Length: 140
Image (cartoon, rainbow, N blue to C red; front, side, top):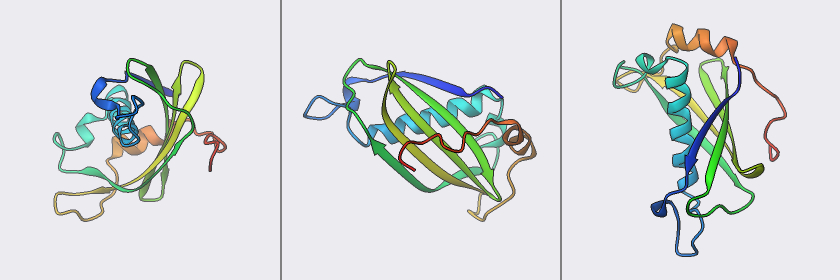
């Protein structure tokens, strides 16, 4: 499948006392991009609340390369792949053409009792068709 890009404008509440985007806001931007990726791929039925399963976050890493500020329009490029039971998302965050941040989240599907479970078949099928660029993150 084609790579997915999510667009989001930096809100006032996303900024800090130095008038730049707060470092913690970038993790929220990634979550919004991940949910938008699932929505775009028709996978919302595979995840809570439409399903009893959820992609629990095991870990995340973030690299802050350049600042962004209030009203900047950020584009978040997402790529995703399956690593056995785990699912890895990578994000490249751009302000115009300049990369301002990179991130990676690692997830595991769990059921309502928080026990690991197999990914939903529709999610597995989608993951098989996703494009993955091995050298995508600059800071890996």
